[in-house]
Length: 380
Ligand code: TRP
Image 1 (spheres, rainbow, N blue to C red):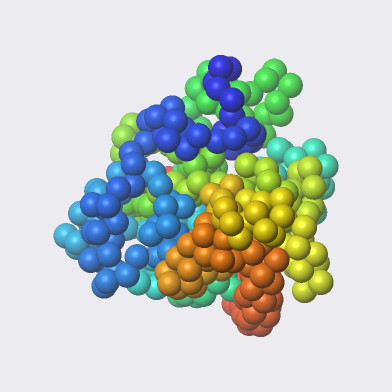
Image 2 (tube, rainbow, N blue to C red):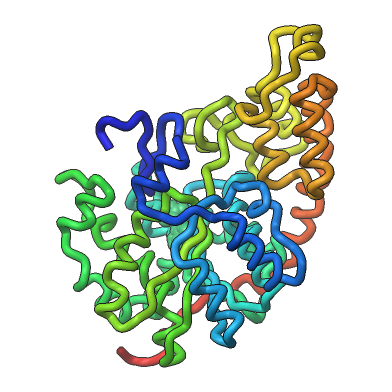
């Protein structure tokens, strides 16, 4: 991608991302009105805001998943988290959608917590730290409302006995030249990461292995994770498993105006779920907007929601109704809504979510451990 102005891989995201171009580069399909209409029908007349507002914008084989579901061949959901610190709001994008699909369709959910991957990929974190963040992050994820009976967790360092028999077979199918090209590995890259993509592949096939029949897999994830699953899809047939289908989301922009909400450079770029109310307020107050230099100018000319990090938060999670989202967008553009007022409303909304979330998070601690898969279903 040397001549592109942006880079998107699982290990690096930088530059101003041109999402249409990225879809072409990765060779994925556009998530268009026809598929959205089918989701609308299957889920009984609703489409999740993350789909309706175009945050999920690309897919692989979603039509096949929906065909199967309507013909009595249910699928399962799979997504994951690399625990490098506390969750911030953009980390909820895959899990919010998964939780909604699970609730609507009653399908199983598999969550992978990759404490190994983050130890290998982030030199600054100890083994104990990534494992500890893994558990903390898991509480946050489960608190979104996952069904304890239908939710299963692969916590890599603790679930390795369950994953390894399949990982052995997967790893043999992936040549070093593939991972080197796909992830841009250097001679100095540690060999943990070279093996790791095999472990991220295993959950795609695990239910089929456990049940001894083809169980299709749907993965909602950030588009940056697609390279792993291109590798998975290439080897699926050779192992006798169906290729996983994907739903790709755009990355949520950072509060300081970066292309992604990453905290590698600045903690103020993201809203952590652990931020106390005062910190939430400070971060939103100083967030980058699409506003004008003066109030008078903004009243007269309006502002630009598409470049605004505050609007991105309304869009991805905090505008609960379409009516609210449409009003924020329209009033921003027309100049009727000034940035200070918009931020004030958002702060209040985030505080409300954080309070409810903290309560839900305490409750899941009773059963979180019971979701962790520790045994292989059978010898392989
Ligand atoms: N590699 C992901 C990360 O760094 C974690 C992950 C594991 C994942 N399995 C996944 C993400 C499946 C999406 C879908 O965060």
